Length: 355
Image 1 (cartoon, rainbow, N blue to C red):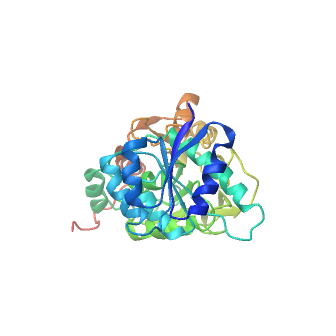
Image 2 (image 1 turned 135 degrees about the horizontal axis):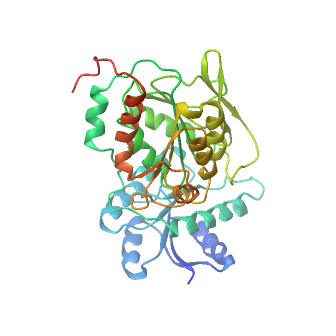
Image 3 (image 1 turned 60 degrees about the vertical axis):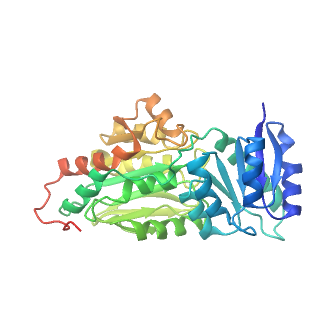
């Protein structure tokens, strides 16, 4: 059976073009269109689609508010289709599985590329496990540990994290309550250019650690998280002063740029046993081989378990390869990272006071 799709967009021209284009490969079928959130709510009950494509800016209720109402009542995979980068971050936080940027007028072949991307995201979304409570949270234990733990400076340790579909909220759940004195963290989340900067800014407002989009030659330092820039591979390098980032454009590796495999390979080579690797939710196998190399180099490696993944693809492939030292549910990973770091360092007695 083809994937049944409901298209929600207030533009009649855009809806018509999507309806004519999405089904050309035969495995996707547009079973209906809606012009607003209210219209979509009515048609959902009748049509029961497998996936929704959702515009954010519509007359009446916007797409963000629609998602917040929809997910607790009827969890369903949603692919956001929007030209607004900043609101897309809000949509992912509200429970959307994937996003595709609307094509810009006048760009050659823009619509054809857009439709190709959207088809792929719909196929991924159709396999996603959508949770009824999309605001993923780190456990209360991690929050308590974060307020009490204070790790001494240790430039040897580094934490590398990789994720794809469902990863924006999974990463937040992992890093939000980590102590401000945590070792430097480097992250690849599959995202296009511009979105990674907005995502880093969002995390920076929510986390104890400082978060920024990585730039070439950025130092990897205690208390800071670096997010790989969209369309740039991120590699860990080392000099006499410690770790730093090499951020460069390049061909796709394992289907992506930035690629988790590229980051993990460099971490295995540069940090070896002084690294911790974490592979989270995502479609495909990017990061699996890299995590195996990290484990073979002596690093401690963690994979997200199936039940808590939006898509159990990347961590599954890593687990099958024997790359995972320990497989854990998402809400247990922050605690595991804190305990792993505490075993390698001698925490100071002073820390952030409870508030």
